[in-house]
Picture 1 (cartoon, rainbow, N blue to C red):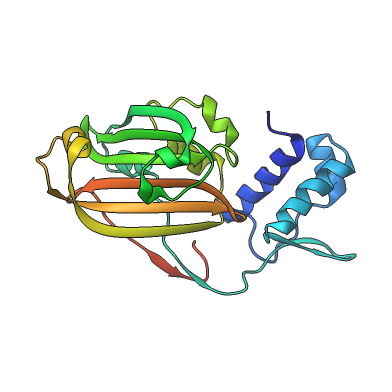
Picture 2 (cartoon, one colour):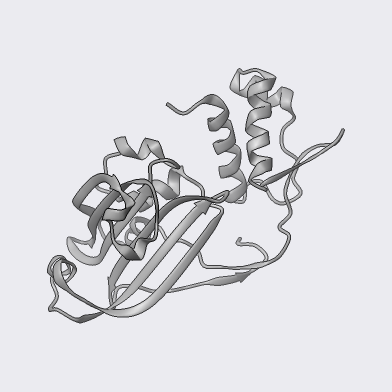
Length: 232
């Protein structure tokens, strides 16, 4: 069960990462947070300390706590929610789970580069019943223990993570490749059919959250990136 201070930290973190709280904005004072969550000052202080340690907020003596201003601008490639993208095109989305296992990271795809105990899932993303992407994903059970009890139907683990586990850092590697073995089988295409391979890893305050390898059919993926100081 998630502790109260973790829930407070997660709530505020989500508001920051989703842009509801902007750099320089002041957080509610401790007394207001104590009333909102019906908890002690120690619990609130523990949550704020965790946010400060992650670099998301700055405490200023006698002034309060403020959302941290990024020290440098960075190029950002957004992480898409495939379920929303498919539905936005007027199609029916579904995630078909092919394999689910709790295991050591050493057992999963080498390309995922994650460590420790993980929830490993393999599945296919469908639009109007037809497959358009094959996915292999590992989620750290140290960072996200609650995912162990989550059911992925009709939406996949990626959608669940985007809605419940904010990230602070991401790395995306994109290459062209051919579909082989079971990926080709579940995508219903011949071996070596051209595909776009997206390997992505995310972290929250330095803690590895997930690593995923997605294989998209060549005509099923559109890459759009916006660069600048912030995303609107």
